Image (tube, rainbow, N blue to C red):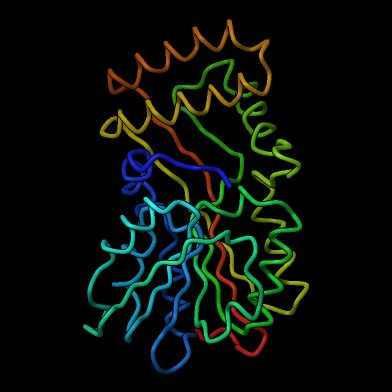
Amino acid sequence: MTAFAPDWLYLREPADAAARATELVNTLRENLPDGDLVIRDLGCGTGSLGRWLAARLPGAQRWILHDEDADLLTRARTSLPATALDGSPVAVVAEQRDVTSLRAGDLAGTSLVTASALLDLLTKDEVTALAKAVVEAGCAALLMLSVTGRVELSPADPLDPALSSSFNAHQRRLTDGRRLLGPTAVDVAATAFGRLGATVVRAESAWRLGPDQAELQRQWLEGWVGAAVEQLPELRPAADVYLQRRLEMARAGELHAVIHHGDLLVLPPSLEVAA
């Protein structure tokens, strides 16, 4: 799994929060089981999804945070809200582990599996195994902010399409023997859950970065262009000039960016979607 710097995760948190599909949470609330909730957050990072979601769900909650990074787990464990939507208590524990190894038995007693910006870092086999584990355990899943490969920059630049294509190829690269799903992850996951009889509800969740987010624009641009050039080195001469031009626009408050993501709500076959 890819490691992420805490500073980057904190910087992107407001954009993540603004992008998340709140309509899926409304549907989720209508389909949660009675009683206390056990929620497992996979690849929790600094805990941003828990901070966003815990106070939007009613009832007593026990969050089990999973990540391979011990430092991130420490940050996340102490940062979730203390109370739920209705004032019920929220308890938090942390488990350092590889989330790709989770199976149905590990999810026994779990009400909800959550993840943010995770699916695109997995392989097809890993997503298929996760779907099987969730459905066999009979729990719901809320899987948010997976990249879908579409970026809109305004004003447009002639090099935008080439960089976007190369970045998407980088997201689907082979690394340590694992072929990442990248922008195909939402489709692959929706298909995997659907084949197992689960109800899958999809929603768009785009970052919309304006002039007031110049630092996030800068770091995103540097990562986006850097990955594209790593994938296709012959782009570097033009990309270096492009990046400086785009960064100057960001500093001047002239750049707008829409980075598209997809969210999935998965309900087990035993549940019918409540309106």
